[in-house]
View (cartoon, rainbow, N blue to C red):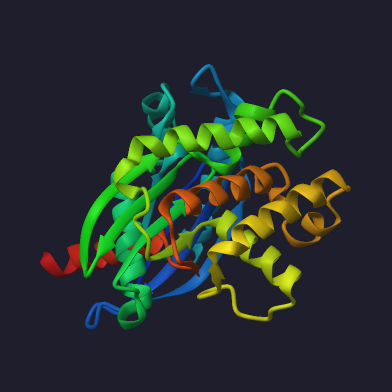
Length: 323
């Protein structure tokens, strides 16, 4: 894990920046080095939509400039706390582009911050670690941890405490919209034919992860699309459950997909109220989740607010204890 250290006295505080294809978030954690426990003392998010700034497989200058400006802001904010450690990692946002090394080198020269690009498999492992720690004894004995981001979806199938298979597939909510709908910049919602193409693409990608087919059990869903999905379901069913731990049975994915398509065709009054920052990605993301849950044959799904950042900080703390 690459990090920038600040020298000062006080409790151990760690800033972690998660650079995703859709959003970039910084969490500042306070760590109890005696117990290994941690808590979030500050959280910030910016919807940079870096996936929309990829042309011919490269992050364009505008996208790099926006990332530079945000990292500079986050670094200044962390230093003003002050924090002991500032570290940043990127997932599919920089993992799948051809000029990632050049972008990272330029940002390091300007800011002194080294961005680590983690693999899809590492991202999935962090998600799994976070899920185990978050749900502890209530974790279902068999299931799949699923983290859908803007550019990819990570899967960890497990049973009785053991990992059965790990996959990272190029199924991202924003990436799907860009691929199948991006030529129409003024219309955020996919047409009927585009929706069919999205479903066919997701089905084809899932075939590359054959061990996941009909795996069953409980799915633990991580990411902004999952949170939006649960919020839409709550609006449709008048439920008042907390987002973290919100349970969806398998029939609800079809119901939510049907509702967002109808809402998009009718002016998107519901989605504009519930998830205004995800108008371009929510319908592709929900359609993808519908296909994913069908393919996996899950019994039900649980929304988790713990994901790659929590897994990353857990591993960071474990590394400290080994030193």
